[in-house]
Amino acid sequence: MIDEKYKDAAAFLEQAVHVIHETGVKVVELRDRYARMVMPFEPNINHVGIMYGGSLFILAEFSGGVIYYVSFDLARFYPLVKEVSIKYRRPATTAVTLEVQLSEEEVNAIQEAAEREGKKDWVMDLELKDDQGQVCCIVHGTWQLRKFPDQN
Image (cartoon, rainbow, N blue to C red):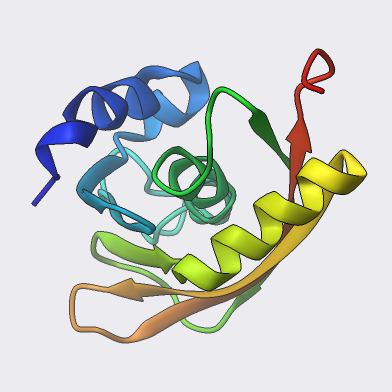
């Protein structure tokens, strides 16, 4: 379920980047500091009948932007992806789900550091799971929260 205050954000996020939109990814749950996204199997099927690795990577990378929208002060900060690595553990032959969450303490610490230093990295370790709950991919990523230049 998407929290009412984030309904517009979910629609925006699914449309914001054309290539992400083309995968059909949906933000299916969104609330403070938490998101759940689903990548449909079709149209993300590769030449051997499994989910295309690039689509799985898109889902992983996309999660940093989604969690940003429900965690950080959008008027003071913006996110960048610094590094994402993905380990493909098993072929995905169904839709794939990704949950991402930050604690209130993590968010506060990241924002306070970005306020002082102009930027602050945050790391997330994630699991992409198929419809049976099997882990298809393990992801390690570093995103960065940056202060808008005109902020004092």
